Length: 509
Ligand SMILES: Nc1ncnc2c1ncn2[C@@H]1O[C@H](COP(=O)(O)OP(=O)(O)OP(=O)(O)O)[C@@H](O)[C@H]1O
Ligand SMILES: [Mg+2]
Image 1 (cartoon, rainbow, N blue to C red):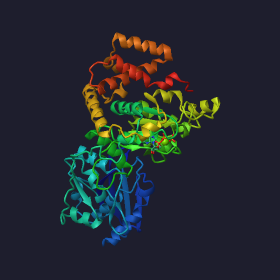
Image 2 (image 1 turned 60 degrees about the vertical axis):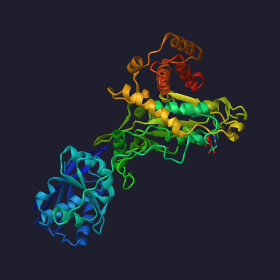
Image 3 (image 1 turned 180 degrees about the vertical axis):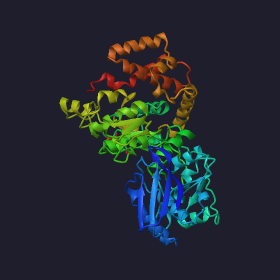
Image 4 (image 1 turned 120 degrees about the horizontal axis):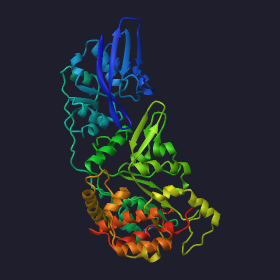
């Protein structure tokens, strides 16, 4: 007898339907799976067999063939255990075939018949809604993430027998609901900008980066507070809009990284990979492609501490996602795309010993060493970083002074106001921050008056700024004006923006 259960798998971060066809026919006892089953899927028959037996069902002693359609797409993961088991029970007459037609079923089985979590439940729920299905059966541990999608019933499943009873109408599982409302306020954190003494200039640059989504590079001697500042950046980033939260959560769901019981990620991600990371780890990859750190930082922050310590080829692969906001990974069999729209924050010392340009300690590096060190960050990569800021060591009086720095919450209010202005400005376009403007948009949204033009001209000549630097300066000026609540970019805004291109003025390569 033949039975079909409906399940789902993901390519990239989007789900597609997989029909699980089970045929049981007379013949020598056998159990084969066809339809490009990889790794964990191929092993699923052992789990299914044990789970059926341990749940009290007879395992048919006939010839069982399982086909996963479409047959030409590689299937990976353990989510097909449950639909295969249900297919077998339907083919043997224990479940009415019509009961399967309107539902997606996903879940990994453990040998005792209980259901374990899977990856990608959120994307699968989104797809089920698009197909107007009645509901989906998912492992209980994944119910919260799937239930974020409205208008689709999500049935949390604990065991195989519970699912079988539900499909037979004997036991009703209550659909899972989550509170979709409150996205967490980013301020509920232990870290606060008030902890950072002095460094007012740097804090200002960090605020501008957060408000306009500008990439930022901090350069300074050891112990100046670069890492400290970067760690506090997430406390002033504007909270996630629902759609952004959904996109980012999809990536985490596909990686199986959603915290249990949590529907959506509520904060902008902050990823700080170690400098020993491989290019596949950073950008995504592997035989069966998986998203990398840049995608886990989607709609959030990617912090690269000690940037020149990263391998050069690893840094170079950042260029594509920084330009396009996506990562494309090609394999012989398929091409997958992951979202990767992040703000890059880098930190580095000015030279290998760390004290080049320091007022108190002498630098012991040779000119060649400094050049080699800085050349690790290539020109094209530097070009994509809008703001460069020197982080000098903190004077003793700043560290011991009683006056506290401005708190994250008051900086956050300004960032939020600037973000609202940008949302209004870009609501008819595909971009959502000043940093993402292309040259046409810069022309449209960043007009400057004669005085500012004259100032820019002088700066370009005096500091030898490139045409690229010019457009960066205009974008930063726009964000500074937004933070000030000003409609037009004024001369003071441009003057401040010029300061954030310090490296254009210095020897960099
Ligand atoms: N501005 C500051 N206010 C208060 N404490 C600070 C400040 N700067 C540095 N510190 C103290 O010094 C410690 C080291 O700072 P941090 O790790 O941020 O330095 P860094 O610039 O990242 O140095 P490195 O180049 O060695 O990585 C912090 O944990 C903090 O205790
Ligand atoms: Mg550091």
